[in-house]
Amino acid sequence: MSDFPKTPRTTITRLPKRGEYDKETIYAILDEALYCTLAYVREGQAFQIPTGFCRIGDKLYIHGSVGSFYMREIAANNLPVSIGVTHIDGLVLARSAFHHSVNYRSVVLFSQGELVTEEAELYTALEAFTEKMCPGRWADIRKPSKKEWKATMVISFRIEEASAKIRTGPPKDDEEDYDLDVWAGVLPLELVKRAVVPDPELKEGVELPEYLAK
Amino acid sequence: MSDFPKTPRTTITRLPKRGEYDKETIYAILDEALYCTLAYVREGQAFQIPTGFCRIGDKLYIHGSVGSFYMREIAANNLPVSIGVTHIDGLVLARSAFHHSVNYRSVVLFSQGELVTEEAELYTALEAFTEKMCPGRWADIRKPSKKEWKATMVISFRIEEASAKIRTGPPKDDEEDYDLDVWAGVLPLELVKRAVVPDPELKEGVELPEYLAK
Image 1 (spheres, rainbow over the protein chains, first blue to last red):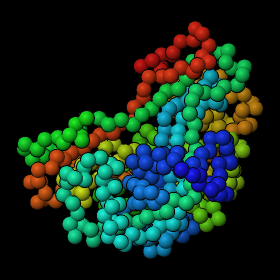
Image 2 (cartoon, each protein chain N blue to C red; image 1 turned 180 degrees about the vertical axis):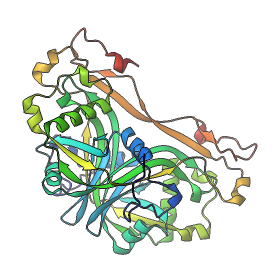
Image 3 (cartoon, rainbow over the protein chains, first blue to last red; image 1 turned 60 degrees about the vertical axis):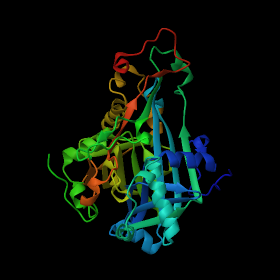
Image 4 (cartoon, rainbow over the protein chains, first blue to last red; image 1 turned 90 degrees about the vertical axis):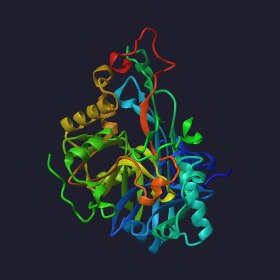
């Protein structure tokens, strides 16, 4: 896959060697994230909302209630937004306070919201939301009713301007500090799934589906 | 602890019963987060940066290089910002697509940046950063040199306007769906620490400190 163009808004100026612009890297970071932070300007002030999302091709989708104030604002005015996701992969414990750091993978992109009105696109996006959250789930559940469709708003954001910033690996200390008697290394962090908790109202006899049993 | 005032900017309008305004809840959510998302306006456009932070009392601190463009921007102009953190605690798997959700705890606050110039405050903040990341670490490592202090910028944000939004518990389905043969429940998620990875350059004979051995 190709690169996103480096624009003044997406070019990494601080520690530029941590910057990445290729689509494959950026899409992988986005796809692994369970939510994004959506920032936009309202009356001159920056607002931010954490929200679930999915990506299909070069479009990112969010969904919510037609009663959601910020969704309506973004959809009505095709508001320019900044969307970000971050994964923290580890704590980087250096010999010096100064070189302590974090291993991370983050993406920030700029786009404008567009209300999704076409039924096929709406349906595809909603299925993708569910399948991203829990692969195999869509086939198993009750699909949206007409009333529920009417209550749901989906907004798309074309991904045209994006960059990633990534840090990996061990600490980088000053040359003279490597001789100190201080332990140094990385404390890895991982978001893990725990054992499922059945709904107390679960109907008797309904078994855990295979896609959740692994 | 008391509540933060409900202002037009922090009042939860969508699903208001998920809103929380008490300081204890908000501080606990902030303190557990390893990074925050800082959003601000540059030339009419919303920007966002993920960054480490710590909280001391009613102030939140970020730090970075004096060469950091956005830090300088915020410090020089006491820019108004929005700061957010989010924890995803579980995937909420309902019987219907419509009621799928996520258990989460998020905070959004509004503040203005203020450059920290007093030495005692700077030092306390930097120690708090390190201790938040890894309790016990500060006593063990090489403290910042004069040169490193000069290269570090710390900005404080007084927390005066903040709200939390929280979802917990099992799915809430429509009455008539509880009889469907669909498994429902929560898939809990947790950010866990894995076994430490020693720096390949670790000096021979340096042992893992006790505060990391648990």
